[in-house]
Image 1 (cartoon, rainbow, N blue to C red):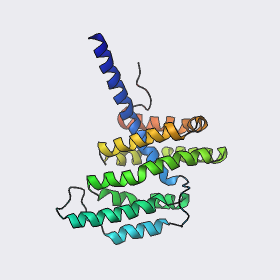
Image 2 (image 1 turned 180 degrees about the horizontal axis):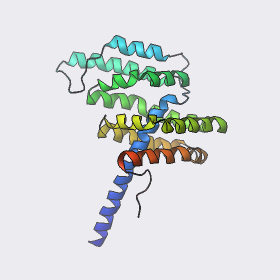
Image 3 (image 1 turned 60 degrees about the vertical axis):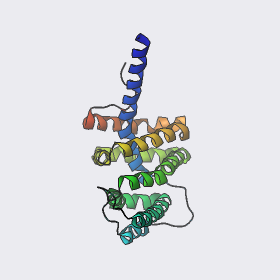
Image 4 (image 1 turned 135 degrees about the horizontal axis):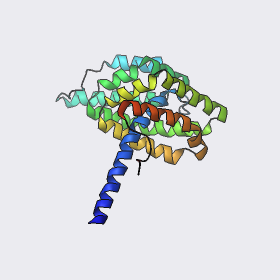
Length: 220
């Protein structure tokens, strides 16, 4: 009986840690749009991506999908095209796209199923590239990235991003968390983790202010 209680307590602690880590990883996911991407040889601009989204004229399906299978298929094809363009944005274009928030507006009108599809098409690749790009950056450039992140936290922008991220629901956050944790532990070097430490600590302070949680193992 005592062993069962101990096992249950351990499982609860692990679940708590993953949940607490999720908000920090959502913030990292949002910061991906400001990180260098090494993919694609054809130039894709933020303007082109925004034009594709505008031309698609997505109706708001956030509260549910209509019964038309044809419409659903047409939207899925367009979502896949937009995901492909998103994956091919370079550093400067990702920054412009993030500033315009057009991608966020697009994501809000998708149905829960479509949101899951878009995340599946973009988040794993974005997370992998995020960590690989950080590892490939010269130390000075990586430090500039950390400095930029700290400046955004100081301005309150990261807290706003975290709050918006929570609006998309627990399933979205859980998926992002899983991919973020995998990429962080599998793709980043020990030196990169060390360089990111100040940024992660500042994110932790933001989380404490938002939810009273801490990024890291629960206290014993």
